[in-house]
Image (cartoon, rainbow, N blue to C red):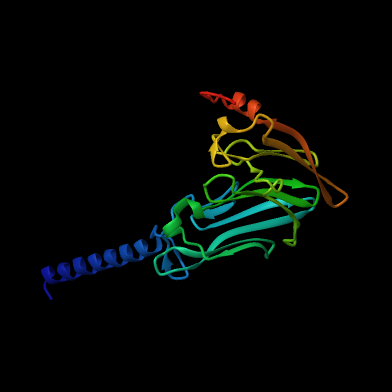
Length: 244
């Protein structure tokens, strides 16, 4: 075998090795996220969890210390459809499920089906947080869970007259064993009972503050402040053409 043939064979072998290595490397470093063998199509932001230790577009692992114990919280989309969108979402603590939702339709509903977990806080032996179901506004629930996933507190409606958590502003504060929640009956700071707030009766209460105090293993709820329509309009700076 002459030198030209030997050199040709060596070149071919090197090229093949390079191609094999490139193909192997590309497969391992494929940036397209897959779950259950399906290429994921959900956008970043479809699952939002504050303070993840491990995360991607469809999964978050968050570790918190509760006294001398460790709480491992996991949030994930599940049951992916052929179109790449999840059919379910589940949240768990130390392997115990505390939230599960089936029938997701993110491909049609978009951000209205996004899942947002924020405002985590340890209170004695519990973990407090808020869960916002989509981006429509006033879709937030205040939760308190223990390390076994038992739901100790689950509050969305502050009263029976459409007073919901005002989740598109700073609506929650923690101090010692007290949670303070800001709530509203107004949609997007203008719509009250289907009409402009300018038409709201003067005596109507549009917003309020509530506290939840945790003591002796129980929460006590208290209304601490109310905002009527006149005060609300002044606070927001709405210019009404007339006020009857």
